[in-house]
Length: 412
Ligand code: HEM
Image (cartoon, rainbow, N blue to C red; front, top):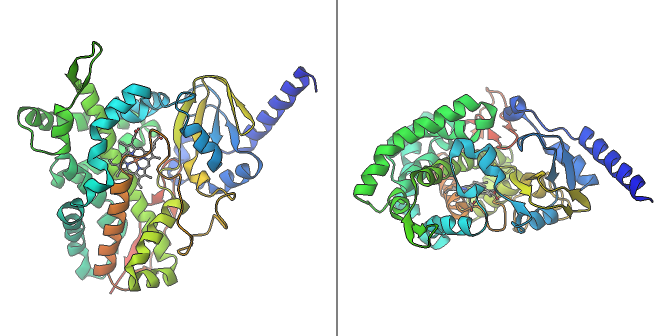
């Protein structure tokens, strides 16, 4: 085939694939059901060309299979995270998820130790259990509840606020700001308003910790030092402090709140499995891991190609946005049998849910701990949990973030 013919064939393939691939518009994000589209595209290609979208005016690519996702996420020199500064960074501030190389390592190291698995042990009894116990005390006598409005929407946000050093009584406004920041591209004025409101709220707390550290995460960030441009150690500029908090608070709240809704949905729609977990709490570990695979609350992460390259046989031009569809990778037929099924007995294995490579989720141990501890407390306090047959059957919905909007249940 001549070079011209090969190029023509490539552009036909690209046009054809792009035409067949349905990327929901922002307006459709909160009710989208993208798994079928990902599955049919994944069957024919590892890397799907997509029209311009969140990455701006340039056409891009979606990476749909596990092996190719690992290739992209573990090669930060070819696939930069800077693109995150452009789209979500404008709402969250200057944050580590949008940094590369030495700058990223320096900032990540400032907080990484706080989230190591070994550090979390004392958070179970001291922090996580009191929060979930308070929430369950309110609904346990009632016999019915909406587990999203009454529990999951209030629980991870209170945990991350307490870790940060923000009064947990203010969780309701943080839950709203977190939602508006994460969905900033959907409604930019609302996203910017949330950013301003959260900064105004945090300012006096940051100033107070600057004057007198109290051992919480805000104190650590405010007093941390990293090498400045001339090599001398410097405190973080305010923009970076707000960027840290603007990422950590929503990342800690929104993602885990939806993940917990997904776990409860999976159990409530598989009553035999739920009965087994009631009888044997050690199965909660499998229930959480299988749900994180089957319905990941975060479905994608973004990169931009820094040079011309090829992934899974697909040419990617320098400057092209690359979305790694972590949720699609978790249903890659090459790794998982019957990937669309939620199976409590599926052997445990690696997941793409928390990403991989240098930006792998900092909060993954905390998230897993919160999910197991929260679900265990729910099963302890709410016996015979079942979906309320009088109310419409709930659904897990969404595009970049997925979870059920409500979970009406009866118990007792
Ligand atoms: C089930 C819940 C969660 C999911 C599915 C999730 C997912 C992810 C994913 C996929 C990434 C990688 C982003 C990338 O490669 O660009 C990430 C990064 C991150 N996550 Fe999570 N996350 C969860 C919970 C949390 C929690 C509880 C925290 C609390 C602190 C957190 C903090 C972060 C931070 C700070 C990063 C950026 C790390 C970096 O750029 O080096 N996450 N998360």
